[in-house]
Length: 74
Image 1 (cartoon, rainbow, N blue to C red):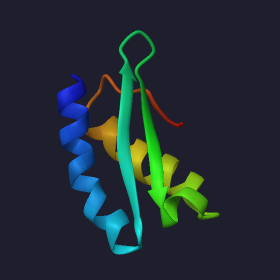
Image 2: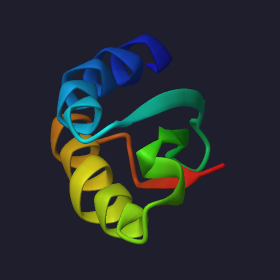
Image 3: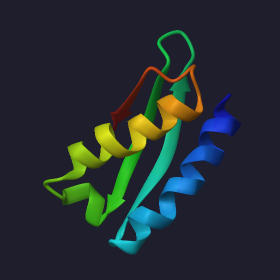
Image 4: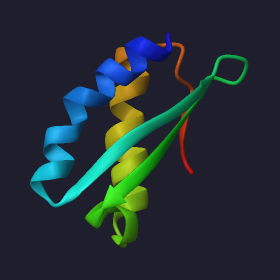
């Protein structure tokens, strides 16, 4: 499952990198369905980071992988 999530995040990364940011996969907790990621670069300090995380990354991962229930920033 972790490999699948990491591969899905690779598809999101170019959009973030285009704005000077990036995302790093940290972990997936199968018991809660929570993906943990680290936002980097411009995304790490951007005031819109929460929107990017919840309405972009989380939405995409939940649609692509039903085991994902939430995405948290660490």
